[in-house]
Image (cartoon, rainbow, N blue to C red):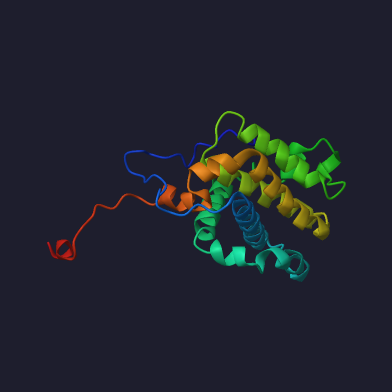
Length: 206
């Protein structure tokens, strides 16, 4: 089933950091914008892995990627992409042909621009109905990446930006309070960085 492995990246409290409380948390609007930018970056990387990145795709994504948010998320995206790619590797059937798995339409046909966002929204409601964690959030981005592959495979390049907007809608409706409480998307970095004991300069020589 699409969403049965969401605890893959759950926190081991004995060896992983909590989000840094000292970091300034962006506004709700900024968190949504950063999430949409991360989605655009993830889609681009996912399409490149699938061999579907071309000029038409780049043109559609440019408006989202050439923004100040792309600069502010430059530290976050490599971690998100690596974790999403690992999910894709571990569960290839789950994150490919996503529209076929979620849609009742023949062959998973995306019949209009709102179909992929609707499917993503349905998947997110299932993912986050009991709890929210970073593993599930990464899974949501991986689902969006799989839907983007389906969009391009079906030749609906104009649907890509609507999918990114749909990701922003999910963040606003389902994730915003949790993201605020967990360091915004920067909290993902705190989640994956192991605790390093404090050491002085001289400790490195002992």
